[in-house]
Length: 125
Length: 470
Image (cartoon, rainbow over all chains, first blue to last red; front, top):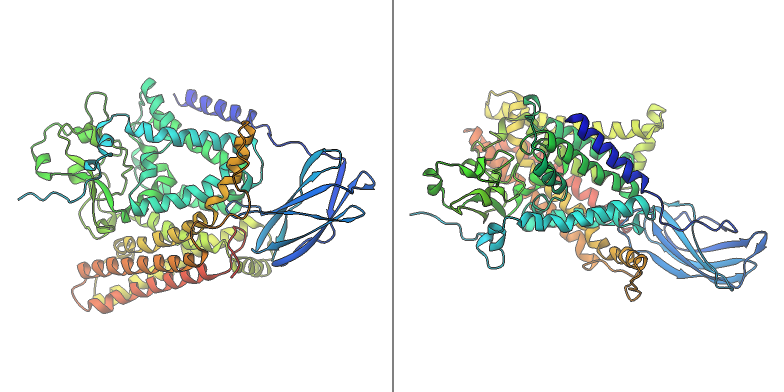
């Protein structure tokens, strides 16, 4: 009986793992993004995001940034970024908590193309 | 003249069906089962960012907070509606378990080990931040419940294995409701004992709690089996004084005397000190402490550092505090029992402050993060083609004004401390007939130390898990 149930459980786990393919959209590698300076201290900070389409700065895009923590339970901040030109976009974010944060960038290009990217997480201390 | 308790939930209009309808528990389990499946699917296949995934948001924000509040307001509702039991119950319709749970495992030691392991894994692998691991945790629970209870008779998974169940059952000692006999006299003439042996297709208590001798909520999952099995309709969900069972010295059916069981004592210790440890992992000083440890031992392994913290918090600190209190108690009172036996008798007195700390902690996340389910829900509905764009995703306020949370937390700690003081005082008076006030003092000092630690922890600006600064 042990063997039978052991096999059943293993098969179930295998099945669950197999269906564990991601539903999240794949990232568009065409655009490159980087923060001019990674936020590190608590409080309101102005962040500047540099976006390039290949080697060309991406202008005339609508860029929305969502700041959230890497754990559940805290409301996100969603801010529309202001275009500064030369592929630079700026926004003020209130990093009101200590801990690990992450920025999710939503870009709507002038031609209507939409993409989302999650930037590497960073610590607010 | 017979005394009938004032309130029986099963006598209230709208709840009578719980006692009469055979599929009442199934009806309660089914929604949670569906929710569990949703969380497993989303956890494995959805966004791997905790605030964006229903597995992490529901388990670590909503479930834990609602669990504690439900335990304190009503009773062990989550064991009653446990979704992990559903596949197990269905499997038992096909295959009857053949084995008996080994005698050497008929205690809480395995559950103690699993509870510690769970606390450790929670910190080491950041379970709260991982949808995938949260989903796998749920799958593991289903698998373990199915495997164990399909192989062994009774409900050994709930009674001897499930760390979550132990957590719930310990917390339910402060619940205002318990499954209990309505009229004890009626049981005296009962010859069939259906509440424990079952009748027809209805099982009796699979956790081996015999209703006429059952005391309190320990080991009771509120599964309703005994209620449905009793042919005399003599078992109900009765109101009681919360914590009353912690004062009782009666032997408990299916358990014995918890005051004489070291396994129960260690389980309560891990539960109580674990509440402080779990909160300690959230605040900034823990990183200062890690840095200090790193410089002392020249080891940066997180597993090692965490192990040191766990040994300090769950072994050394309680051994020093409880051992010191027991030694002083013995000196003052002239009691001649061994220190471990004395600690076993007093251990239950610390449960209330542990329960208070868990409640203060989990309720905080529940209150702050309650509405964070909305963006997740909106996203899931959008995937299903249902547009709920009116649902807010930002500017989500706490459930109650934030200024009320800290006073609530302090109130919980104070209430827990007072209850702990009352229970340890009661234990002192039953064990010592001389210098009772002085004999109680060491235990009171431990309670003060724990309450002070809890208040300090809750007053810290917290890290990692989303507590607002200041």
